Length: 386
Length: 228
Image (tube, rainbow over the protein chains, first blue to last red):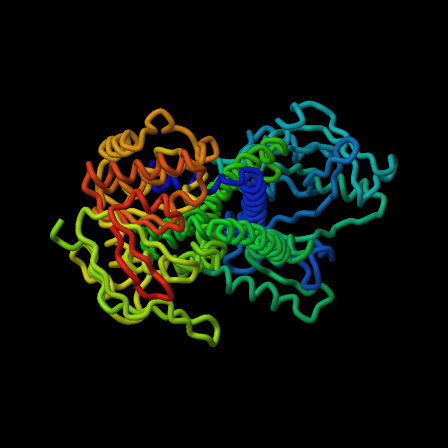
């Protein structure tokens, strides 16, 4: 027998209670891992993109469209190499599968995003075919789309002039990312801007949600963003120009302050866990006062007894926490695979480090008071049941 | 048996119970030679368990000196006293106080976790202790699978395994039937006569006291007489 064996034996003295407490810890850390990964998604897109591009939207909101006629003025700004534009389509595949579908100018988009890789012939087909669409490899593989197919996609925003919400596009190309990071971004579909302008029932023409400015010199990003916004200040189409990272964060914050929501959920979960596990540890020590006194009579010091109780708390939290984080890692991978990469729930090293730190802190929080009680107990009083 | 194992000199012990102070031992002096087997008897509240706790290093006197196995244990701090207990004293309690989650052999091994012995050596010492008390065949059993007498034997083995010079026993047969009690007391006699252990037993039972070499009577915190 060893001290750690003794700790484990004591942990499972009330098997049902310990297992139920462990399950609580596992669930808490499973949630922690998944929710931290959700937080990571909202930052990852922003971290991923570099400062070689700027995004210009309407100052009020990106839902307010801007005139495409702004393009020549934007391209005239020193330091701006090329400008593309993108209009949110609100695509739906089959019954109710939401897709990321944007209406773009094909060749401009290609120039601004060289990271998306597709044979030139397919780019040309996209540019020259009015009803064309191209799909990212992730999404094409997920739904089994092949070049040459006609793909029916509805829009939940823009009805088609002749066929209600139902649109149909010719898949003329499938693009991939230049590397693994960009491959994970190929969960989008692009349609031809000209067809959208021509065929949408609202008669929306020549307007777009946002412009993408490819920069010749990334060191001038801040100066160029100020120049753009100054150019349209006090006009009917005032702009807000920012990096892709800030644009993505702002886009997602339309849903709500995700970070704050996640933090409050985790706070509630861990506060409850603290009470549950703390109660378990306190009960466990209370039941064993005479045994702890006997340990002291055998020669275990006050510090040793404190250490044994703390070790028990740590064993409980460590086992439950690590299992929870492992399940979160596996769960995240399953979600990523199941959604064709649309939701990339990755537990990276930082989540694990924070998770382990949380395990240690939780162990101290739930174990310290019972451990101090064990340390302070007087042998004679404890043996006499006082 | 000329050297002293226990020397208690003018010891007083006062307990504070709320605002009240209760003097349990009054200037008590006693000497227990090495290899002795002493029974402490007295009515309830006479101070015999208090004296036992002081001799065993579980408590400190309010005043006076206590010398056990060559150490002034009244002067030791709690850490040093714990260390002293680990090497010098074995305890046997009325209700055995075994760890219910451990087997008999693991219970006996507990004190050895405080030593630097290897796992193999610990296992050997445990086997020897269990053999002395006649429970080698019950080593893997948990306390709930043992009878009262067997549990007390395991407790005695645990008290012996570090090879202490002194065994202190607080009503070791208080929870046992007559036959089993006699077996346990017989075992204590063997430990005293054949293994040279100095034993101090607190008991209410005159028959149990009969197994000792001599009996000391306490009343109202003072020693009355010494009987052979």
